[in-house]
Length: 81
Image (tube, rainbow, N blue to C red; front, side, top):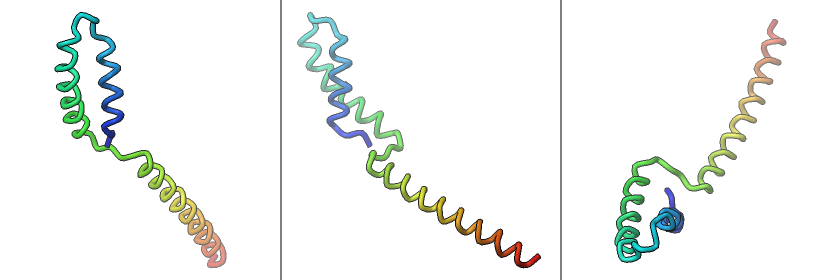
């Protein structure tokens, strides 16, 4: 899930696009934009970078084990022939 700091940065970047004369509206817009961003981003199935990296390491270890098992299986098939 995207954290509040990321949402704040995204909101600030969008606010920078507003004309300078809309400062009063900008404050209200900023609050509503943050709520909207949080609601929409909650619909996405996201994981943190740490969780992604952890799962990538688990997948790499699993692939290594699978390759080892496949090699052993080939050796056993050769001995049976």
